[in-house]
Every structure is written in structure tokens, then in C-alpha cells.
Length: 257
Image (cartoon, rainbow, N blue to C red; front, side, top):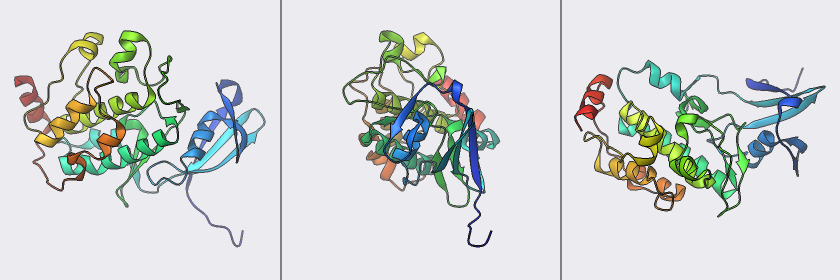
């Protein structure tokens, strides 16, 4: 039709009976919590943008932006023969910490930060956090007693005590993702490792990055960095580049630590 703008979109269709929580949104009315969370963070350049939400009989269609030339971080890492250089990783982590900090200030926690949920616009070099299906609101100082997300990302405080604070969980999962991006491996693989094993930081990483990882992956959440501290950390602001070593060589170095 004349006067319309055609843009690529992503449409997520959900059966209403499978939606756990509907909430009242001041702008959109009674909608799935996922839609309300997307609407609250709307306008941030590093969150996937909500375009519309349509109710169709027994289904809800969530219409979102879709960058034309993009890949998720999982696919990007799978195609690389070496682990990301620190300067490449910094571009992604700076943007992710920015949107997660903005969400925290609005009382939102994503609860499923992982490489599959990080979309990278290859033309703009812009990160988009996607899939807010597990996102929820939180009250500062109050704990969440139900873990939702990827099992490998469960923070140690939940494994030990069955509860966690939303912002501290966000820092933990972002720390795990950062470690995997620059090291090519998971720092912890079992219950005992997650709760008891000291973090081993590879020697080939820069001093600032070692410090950041150690701060993000503290077992004790009260000693863990805040998202604001992550965003303002010296590693996030430096322009220094570091050698990107082949994946197998980095893993062999890790085994010698």
C-alpha cells in the first residue's frame, strides 16, 4: 500500500495456554510478561525492539525488529578458528553490560543471558539482546527463589541456598559468557566446580581482563561486582588490543595452569 514502510520483522507466535504470566502494561494493556518487559526496555539500542503485539484467537503474536544481516553469537563463535581477541570481545560486552544495566535500573532481569540470545548486526557492529521469554521484574534487595534459564548458568548461591538476587545473577551469567568468548571453554562444568572450585584465569589474558573475570565470577554474591562496576571497569574502556591465539593453543595453555 502507498505510504507504508516495509521493514523486516521477526514474529514469535505463542499459544496463550502456554504463557505462565500475563501482566497489565500501562501502554499495551493486559499482555504476556515478555511483551511488558520488551516494552519497558524499548528504545535501548542493544535490546531487540518491540514493534507490536497482536492477539489472534488462542495465540499471541509478538512482532519485533529483525536486523537484515545478522548472526547470533553462538553461530559466530562456532565458525571461528580462534577465540575472539579482547578488542572484539570488548565491543560485545560493553553493549551487553549497557543493556543489562539499563534493565536493572528499570527493575528487569533477563535470566537467560547466553550466546544464543545475543544477536550481532554485522553491518552496524551492534549487539541486540533477544528472547525475553524468561525475563521478569525484581525488587532490589529481595531474592528470587525460582531459577529460569540454562542449567549450566546457575549461579552458586542458587545451588547452595535455592535463591539469588536478579542483578547478581546477571553479572554471573555475563561473566560466564565473557569467559567462554575469550577462552573458548567453560570455567565450571559441575555442581562442585561451580560452588567450590577457584576460578582459573588463563595467563594469556590481559591484567585488566583477569581482574574483571575474577570480580564477575566471585562465588559469594555479596563480593561479586555490580553491573555498574562491570560497565565502568578499566577493561571496558581501554583501547589496547591483544593477540588472538588459535583455539587449540589457548586450550592447551589452560590445561597447564
